[in-house]
Length: 256
Image (tube, rainbow, N blue to C red):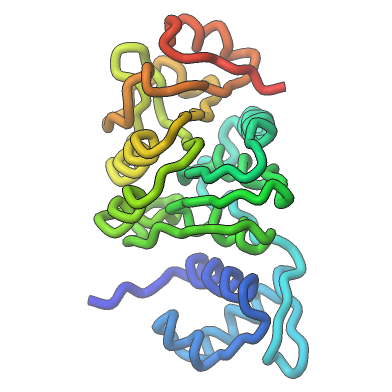
């Protein structure tokens, strides 16, 4: 059975292609996306109307006008201000030349927006929105590949997992659905939990981005115990709760 992409997935792929190649070949793109040329033209017109693309030379060439909105998940608005603070602070902790894993999610979406393109990073991610955004900014991005099977438009399954195992990173930056002392880091989605767990195992240092809504929560699927986490980055209103939950198993940093 052929998987037909949702319009938002097609828009992400078109943006990603334009960020790498100036020329847009509508026929080739239609074949790649498994849709008609008319659908591709409609998608491109919509992206141009929204201000993401600017077509030139009769529509044969395009350029990025503004970055596509990567906060696609309905969760993006939950704890929005806290996620912005956490993501911005976490981005300030990244050193030049690092190879980093970035997990999917709305808090890591804030993190990628504040990464400095001059850091000469190599980013490995399963998130199509994160990969598209970073590629458009000039980052070296390695996408894991895999089946798209989550609300966050993340690549999952065997292909993604095997590709993550091929790399070792200086840092893994992941989100979470729960942080609890007796079960550690957890997620409600088994595919995301598996990806995050592998990123943790393949990294020298693990940063978990977590707002106050995650403290004490035990979601369905385990990612890793707390002693495998180096730093939990949160906001000042959650600091004491996380310190009590972690009990010296990992460091708690407050976004400033």
